Amino acid sequence: MKRLLDCSASDFCRMNGKELKQSILAAEGRTIVAEVIGSVAPLYPAVTNAELAAAFGADLLLLNMFDVFQPLVNGLDTKEPNQMVKRLKQLTGRPIGVNLEPVDPNAKQLESLASLPKGRMATEESLQEAKRLGFDFICLTGNPKTGVTNNEIIRAIETARDVFGECGLIIAGKMHGAGVAGETGGGIISEDVVLRFVQAGADVVLMPAPGTVPGVTPEKIASLVRAAHEHGALAMLTIGTSQEGADEDTIRQIALASKMAGADLYHIGDAGYHGIAIPENIMTYSIAIRGKRHTYIRMARSPLR
Image (cartoon, helix red, strand yellow):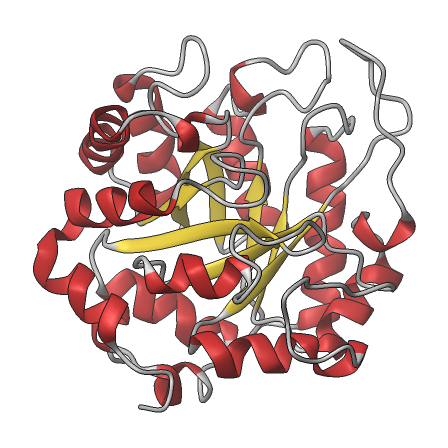
């Protein structure tokens, strides 16, 4: 299997989720995941936020706040719902994933929870629709104030595995507390939780990068990454606390701390500007973990290759 560093659009379009996981593993901790929101006005109206993130070095693109029953990507040159994901792949040459949220209606709240449309929640119906739309991977996580809990994530992993089969790529975990009391530290507080995610069928365990959530140290995350690896899963360390809008030195520190902790994928959130990280921070993140060579090649590689 080609390492992801060397993959072009034509390679990605032939991969299923299992092969994409192998390609990420072969890249040895040098994969950038950029989260974007398509339902808001893009930073620059001439292109989508997804295209901009890809242009600055992202390998995988993750759509947040995307309603699978009412698809919308502002700036995209098609309004046909069934063609939006396909068209984004054509324009960016990248695998495209979507966040779906395993909301727990009985969650003990830290604050008033947001009301989500059914197309953003991780139900069997929404997962089936995400599969029909053509997403390359699914991320089961929670935005702030959504009431997503680890127990609901586990149930959603099991449902997603049934829907997508063994060849689907499922990412699961929490970047922060998601407004739930008693699940601080990003919600990943023990190796037992990591193990339960993997046993339920997660290919990638998502957890906050060191320095993004109070108390999340490199040592603590390194032990959880080791637990994921020991059970055959990859680890994605995330910037989901608006630090995607911090200065470039902060991004470099988070990137290197994440690499020392053993990250396989490095995620950057969508709140640098509204709906996308500061584009220069995506590039800075990429250069920190894999140098200018691989960053510039990813930025320059045409989606026609």
